[in-house]
Length: 327
Ligand code: AQP
Image 1 (cartoon, protein in one colour):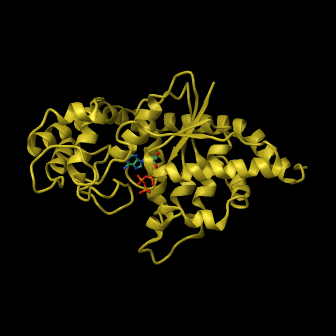
Image 2 (cartoon, rainbow, N blue to C red):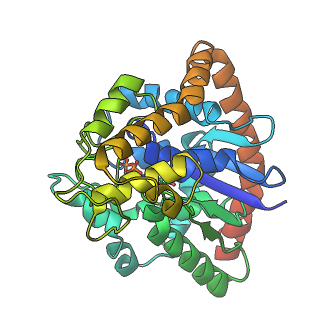
């Protein structure tokens, strides 16, 4: 069975970009794959987090994974910091990745810009991400387009490690979405929709009320002419709406675009499609939130499975590097 691995940081409220680019795809993974999904809390603390919110969001994220359709009987769902092998392998990855390649990561540049304090962890984040993936002998990593460069780095680091120390890691493939690969902010459609940027009107949360969703789409930035066509460079706002509507209704962008001549109906239909898309997820989320012990039990079982799978891979890497076996 092909091993699939992916993760999401509990660094803010999940939005429709996270749902379309990640969570919905996780739930649609081939049932014959062996899937491991992680709540990457150690990545979240590369930027300051309020401790109480981080704890609450970690549980909220577990419930959103489950509400999106992950079956805990079939997949492994766990919290990254519950499996210490991640941080141990991350050190080996930091010693394999170069300062130059980490310096070229565009997400580091974006996230460190305008910050008074930039943590060393934010810089070495991609090495921890490489460890997350390689620890599970992962073959496929479903991620949104924004993670493409980090995935490339994970592949390079795996190949470098293998050529230095002998075949140790499987070199993983990124699997990018065919639709809504990069959902953009509704107010600033040249920026991606993001959990941690301050753009509440431009970000549609997975748990937003229908009325709020409707309002956000109604106010979405488009442009001054009134032609509905898909052209990301010339018409980023309209293209974003078309791409969200296409993904939400599982249609092609061409098919969706041919149905509109005005922005108003495009906005209201996109809002309606997103509300319908999220309705069952929100209902299931409410049920799951009412039973926190059940979620804790799923995470405990997930961590146990994750430790079982990752321990031999970590030992293989330690031995390859020349670290003495643990007494
Ligand atoms: N706008 C997006 N469109 C499509 N996919 C997206 N993803 C994130 N934003 C979009 C995908 O969601 C998963 C979660 O990634 P993450 O938690 O590691 O953080 P991120 O990629 O940095 O996403 P955010 O939401 O912007 O979080 P912050 O603001 O904390 O950095 C990934 O598969 C990602 O591709």
